[in-house]
Amino acid sequence: MTLEQKTHEYIKNSWLKAVKKSDCDKNFIMPYDYIPPCVDSAFTNLFYWDTYFTNLGLYNDDMAKYAFQNIEDLKFCLRKFGCVPNMCRANGAMHASQPPLLFLMVEDYFNYSLDIEWLRDSYDALKTEYDFWQTKRKAPNGLNRYWRNYDCETLGADSGWIQWYARRHGEHILQLSEKEKIQLQTHKTAEGEGGEDHTPRYGGQAGDINPIDLNAYLYGFEKTMARFAMILQNGENAVWDSRAKQRATLIQTYCYDENTGVYFDYNYKTGKRTGIYCSACYIPFIFGITSDKKAIQKINERLIHAHGVTPCQEMPPDGDIYQWGYPNTWAPNNWWAYLANERVGEYGTVRTIINTYLNTISLEFEKSGKLYEKYDAVNGGKATVNEYDVPEMLGWTAGVFSRFFYIKQMEQEKV
Image (cartoon, rainbow, N blue to C red):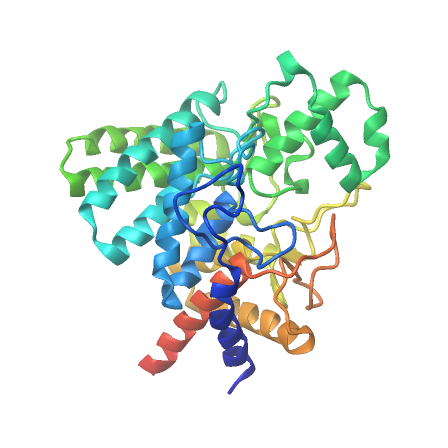
């Protein structure tokens, strides 16, 4: 048995150990048992965007039942809070949502089940989520942004959040003025809503940014809803197609860089693109906004390293710690890089991404007997730049590993 096979066997044998009962939190009982990122430790809630990547592996490991249950719990929370919360618990929506990937989870499960009535119910739930992003997260230029749910203007900075952030980044945070605390909470909560807490790509001004990933996700959301509307024959497909067309025009206007062919984050306050290469730059390729091979090669050159894909290009140090920056690598970064390169036909790069990810996780597993939340893309092994101790992980690390393992196995069977 190869090391990759041993790692995959460990994952398959661990999924059920991670299952949490729907009533494990007596203050917040959900409809179904679920699979969170970790078997134990701090990350045993169902987190929003993590679940998409976890579910990728569940289908391949004969655990589709739990992919369904994870989705249903997210839909339950969406209907309860008006958005899919950062995490599924009583105060999970207090501060933010996370990247809107529920439409991808619904698409995956529908493609698996072909359950029209379930799709109809999910379509209605997705309309609620779409309304949230369009009414609560729209920037003045018509594109969307990550933001916050907590009303700092009325309530002031959340002292609990400030204390939590100070524990991660230094007690000096507690000495800031109230205005400075509100500004910090606003921008860092927006970063967190983007799933990357924290990243250097926004320059500390996340609330002023039209992120290319978010707007490409929403374009994909609109195109997928048009497809769902066609399947359901509800007559709404033209509306969704029109929305996608309008968004594509705005993305082209604000995020597209003619010199490189790359779509970047856009700061609508300064009127400038950031020009920072990050794994978010892969998302327009995934949803067909672009298929420019020269552009994706520029991104690959900056983000693909010996042991994985980094969330962001190497940036000059500014004294802060960014776990979603160089030299770390996370499951989502590798999945998006794989998917984007596959969509434009860069198959050599696709094989490199798959083999590198499988090898990085397997080598560390051989040494420690564990999977981790994140790894070192430059030197290998578990991550070296951390805001907190690197937790032992199943979740998205395992989900993407299982999906890559399956894809590689299928390719080998073809040969």
